[in-house]
Image (tube, one colour):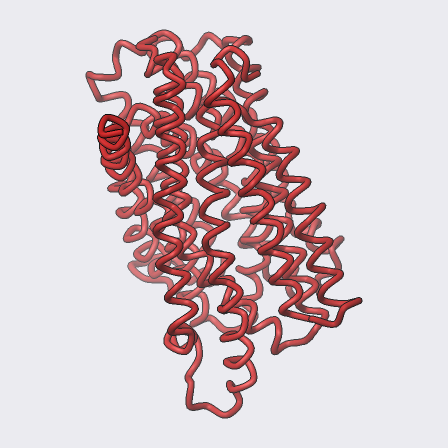
Length: 457
């Protein structure tokens, strides 16, 4: 018992050391869109609508591509655990080739995103506003995805801190570039919303080039021969990357669709419901960055232990991540449950009479969000642990069952036929995430206790 306790205590330290910079990196990435929204707000409501629509097209296009490139992480972490330098180099090189391949398609979609918005029934005015922004930010597709690929490599070899430093620096660069290009400073023309798009492309390019230079410069990485053999595509590793990665992208898309469709259904109920939902979901999204970072760290730790052919070590790493996520999210759940007015006051003035209906409803939703927090933390950590085992296809199917089969159906039935309205939709979210938490945790337990690394495909 004492040995097991010491094992878990040691794993907690390893996971937290790896997770801390990853969490900060995630918060830095969220800050980019937050900064854009705040600064674009000075241009007026039309510009805000344009950036909201543009970001929807950009990030929804990128989410599937990001999922595929995240497969670099488990491929490298397992090779790192096995001390296979050649496999590490091959995985990273094919990640860069995959980046180029995906960027061609993603660029075409984002560059022509205004046509997609028109097909989705957006007003001509909003489409025209978003068009210039999309044309500008489309040039950031390649460096954005390239950064994801290299970031996955560095986190997989337990070197995440440089990624954090670059991401935080990128936030400062973003503020500066927005100021210069949006408002026409230092001899640059005043470009408004389009300037925001070019600023984002510049930041993505800056982040990618600095990270690329770091990887090329580090002597520790020379045994991997990442760049000396970059001109030789490897079909086997390329196919393996896609095989592992596309279910990750699909899973991310399925989960995102649960929240997007919930927003649409909330809009059917009215403006007050939508505003209250936005407050609750924004709070949940911010706290979610911590278990997301822990889940990414768990993916690395599990992959490294699998590479060593140590299933017990992989089990300890995975369940440590789930435990840490549960502890953190239990704390935020108590915050939402015990001090909801303090949380809501971050978004709305509590003494304004016109805000009272939204405040009352947001407080009610935060009580449900308290439960939401815990199951959301478990499911993302469990998903990360399974990715560390290169197990992605079955978890994708479990995501479809959980988010669509349980979450959406439950939310719709409770909200409309049973007239529970906004509470019903949030109970649906909880039901979907809770189902995912149970199914994914069970899947990881079975594989880590009764499977072998070679069985997982």
